[in-house]
Image 1 (spheres, rainbow, N blue to C red):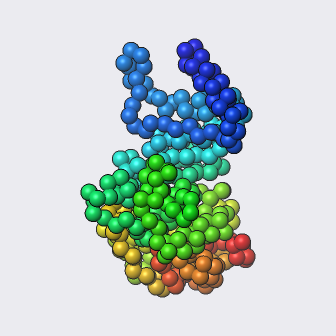
Image 2: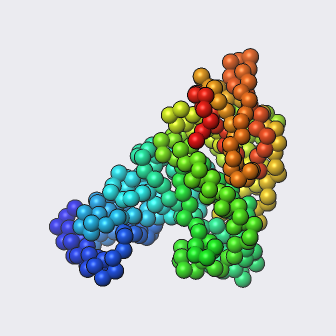
Image 3: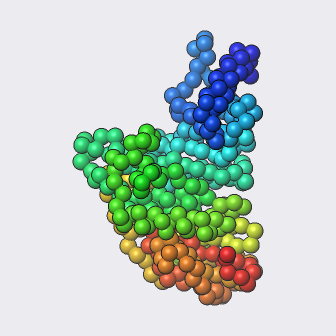
Amino acid sequence: MNQQSAAWQKYLFARMAELLRAFPYDGWQIDTYGDAGAWDWNGTAIDYTSGFPAFANTAHKALHKRVVLNTVSGRGAVATAASHTDFVYSELWPEDHATYASISTFADEIHAARPDRAIVFAAYLHSGLAVRPAEHGGSTVFNVPGVLLADAVIFASGAAHIELGDGGRMLSRPYFPDDSVIAVSKELQRKLVDYYDFQVAYENYLRGGVVRDPFPVRLEGVRQTEIGNAGAVWTIERKNANCSMVHLINFSGLRSNEWQDAAANYAVPPVLHDIHLHVTLPDSQTAGWISPDVDSGRWHELKLRTTFEGDWDVTVPELHYWTVVIICNHGKKPE
């Protein structure tokens, strides 16, 4: 950090400290301007994201407050994960993270760098409709399949989704007070309660010590994708200290890999029944399945069967949007 930059930061944080004395917020969010680029006084392009960690650390030390830094489009997020920010926060845009798979991959990169850090993504469904609804001629109500599939991917990636507004409203664009342009149906409100209850109830199997650790998984009777392609069931493998998780996300009704559901017209996926799942895992003793779409996320036992190859086989009764199969190497069900 050069002397000019250090002096500017000292001045800035002094003014911020005065503001915090007048308005004693719990913390401070630092925003960035995304991918517009940056240049020094002489017009030379510079890597502005390289200064994010030091800036966040200086803010934390100077203000004695919690600090969050929005690494827009994920730029600088991995490096910032090692700073004194409370959690990793990134506003995702289709220009850099257009697909469902890009969300999962990005979360994996952060977890690989700092497995202990919580992640929050802002990802605005139907944002084009919110900005220019008349031009698009689309729905003014959030599309249930689009929202639930995006949440399933984000939650299965070990991250959280900042999307809920005051009074049952939801965010559809980065100007948060404008959260009433697109309405939330009663059906979606009910389903979101189940999804958020599910995320809390099974946090030990979704995040916090959970890592992406691929192992062989094969589905029978349905089309399978391991890279998040539309028109198939996406299988994502993760592990914690004692259990292995297979996420089944139902993309079989999709024609696009893009999470934003720009026209708010993604179809409800067909409900799939009795999916035969084969996995290669050692020392497995307990198996079950959970889903926010079924029985309010309650645990259901599964019978583990050995195959001739020495693998394990289970039959998953239902897949609506998202089902998680949990196979543990101890005799207790997940808590």
